[in-house]
View 1 (tube, one colour):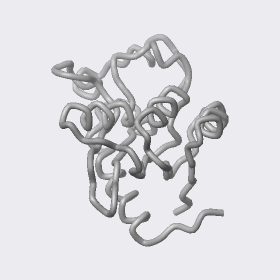
View 2: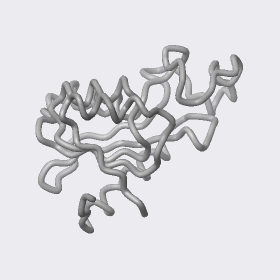
View 3: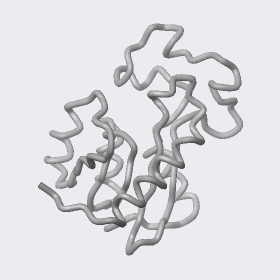
View 4: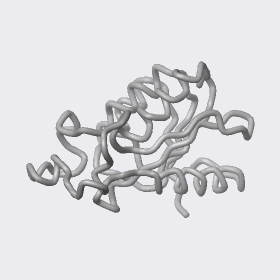
Amino acid sequence: MHKLNPLDYDMMKKARLVATNSGCIRPISRFGAIAVRNGEILASGHNGYVGTMPKCASTGKCIRVELGVPSGTQREIAYCICAEQRLICNAARDGIALDGADMYVTGLPCEVCVRLIIATGIARVIYADKYTNEASYAQAELGGLELIRMSE
C-alpha cells in the first residue's frame, strides 16, 4: 500500500478541476491530468477535441456515442485525445521535460497513455477512478511505471 500525503490529495483536486474543461458530452468520461515535480505543476491536460475543432458538448454529437462504441474500447474511433495525451503535448510544446514527475489523473490511464507516460519518464501516476482497462496495469508493470490508486 502506498502512503499518500496531503499534497497528493490537493493535486488530485486540481486534476479534477482541469477535468471540468473537457468538452465530452458524457459526464462520466470527463478526465483531467496534471504533472507535478517538487510541488510545482508543470503541465495539465483534459480530454477532448484538439486545435480549433468544436467540443462535443457544443455540437451535442459524439461519434463514439453515435456508433455505439463502448467506453474504454476502440480509442481510434474518436475526434478527441485523452487528458494524458494533451498534457504530454502541452509540455512538449512548451519545452517542459516530464522526467521524474508525478502525474495525477482523474481516471486510470488507458494502455496507449501508459506507454506514452512511460516514454516521458514520468515516475508515478496517481489516479482516482478505476477506469475500464486492465491492460494498463500489465503495461505499467512491464515499463516500471508506478500506478497508485487514490481512494478519496
